[in-house]
Length: 152
Image 1 (spheres, rainbow, N blue to C red):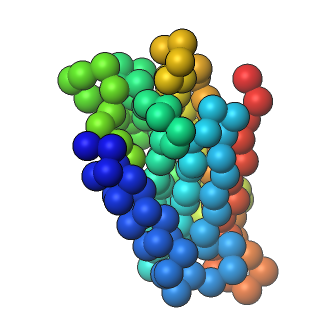
Image 2: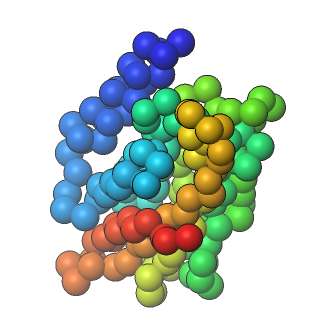
Image 3: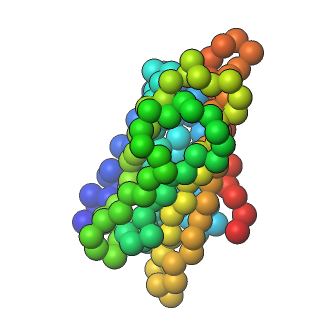
């Protein structure tokens, strides 16, 4: 099972890196617990988010992966806020989520909050981690993407 998780994580990372992305359409960060969060703008109207646990860290299935708009921008075409959860205690590996948006309504920065519980391997303690994904209109009319970790 560990080999499958590693293979999926590598394939997801490769897909992000091998894409024909333009500047500011891919962003990634590694959280203090070792979870790799990657984001990608696809075709200018879809935000793809990958949450990849590393170092035997597990994503808490009961806390889930939360997505919450942090502003009044009405660009999202999916029902938000949302929480992706699983029946068991943990997700079985990486989590991939995509959100459709209409960039025509992007008049200012649109900020999406991302939350998840990262469970440490030795202690089993789960830490709530948070990141913000921001979409904004660039000077050339395209959509720029930024991703930052939010300190607890």
